[in-house]
Length: 188
Ligand SMILES: [Zn+2]
Image (cartoon, rainbow, N blue to C red; front, side, top):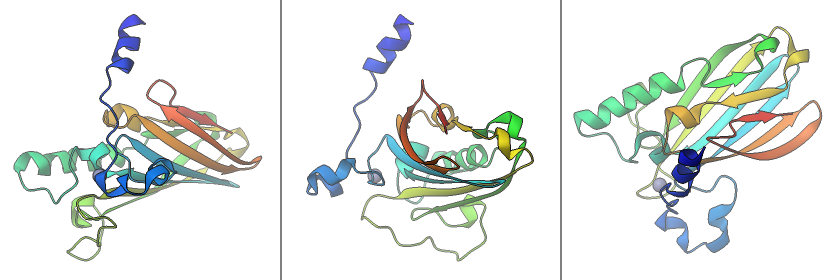
């Protein structure tokens, strides 16, 4: 327990991207590009569950440019495997949800690097020097009446990720919560 507390205190300070410094408080709004943080938008619609991830690429790879070295290329390969692995986002098991689709996109990576079909060049970056990783995940659930949570194990796969703002639009309306490595499950 004490070791865990110490680890939390010693976590590297969140790096606010230089491009946002001039915008003041906007750096803390959901969707802003802040290293260490990400946004997840969850929608529950009948037996369909979907989640949209928006994360600085730094959280995923430790860099935000086109991969050059063999080490950087390997980081992309491992990250894509992790992101496409069923269970990295885990719906309530009793709801018997099956992962149907994962779509990944980034301004720093070609679709082919992400396992997607598409043009040979990545889309343009919103901010020079920075890039996001955008992911779309969807499930079909055989027992949607039992669907009331999503566990986010992205924190385990990507230790540079420290906070996630989660917005849920579900059967009981909309809610928002913040997840961390030690509190990884959003409920609705
Ligand atoms: Zn950045």
